[in-house]
Length: 340
Ligand code: PMP
Image 1: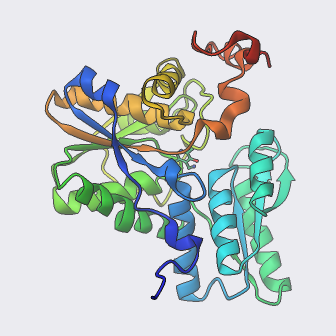
Image 2: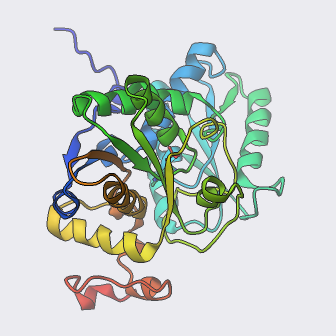
């Protein structure tokens, strides 16, 4: 017998599409979540990591034994480290020093080498994205097998992999019945890739952006200005610039979703549907509910269940932290356990 799974990299994707009962019943639509938290590294970013690594190995920019370098604060670094190790590469992650300990611990547990640097705005040359690009150049020159910078925001292999896998799977799993797709944007790889795949089959599929507070993208699509408003405890989503992976994706409808709606929905899904999801999934699901209201009953709407709440335990289950952000734990969460 030939085993067709050669490494963990072959286990990325082909995630289930799960009907979300509460949202579907409330809206009269079929609201479906693509269970990306079931990827082996625990998030939607396993796909971007695999797509970028495969493209770089195919083009020779990532050589056998070469080092993977990326600027990331979480899920992409975990995906790169996991797939990198499975395929014989070490991974170096440059990360701002204001990130939660949970993420730092997880990246270390996955074997990534971490370089923590001060957090500064993107326009500053010391921002972690720019710093990671420079480090990749230095390591490429000094390491015997070279180094490769993943550059997830601008690397179109990210979007292409979502088009070929996430989007294709959604079309197939819905039997082509999908009317709308909505999600938040970090790099834009997921939204841009899925939108392309679905529109290639049916140009009438409605594409929505669910933007968190603290991001400029909703205002860009609504008013033409990348104006940042509000803030959010969600992580990995929102942006203050149009990345290559987002550019050229027509957005039919966009919303800025407040945490005051998204976070209570996260707790509802835990208690009512057994889905333990991170904050970005909450933003996506409120986006799906709004798109359902816009299209009306009888439509099929798909969104992304990005990762697990367990990745954000110190925030999502910390009453003090939540209260300082005008949020709170649900009544069912034990009060004695909720002390910070
Ligand atoms: N949710 C989470 C938790 C993420 O880490 C990310 C990626 N930063 C996203 C959503 C957004 O995905 P994309 O980069 O494909 O836009």
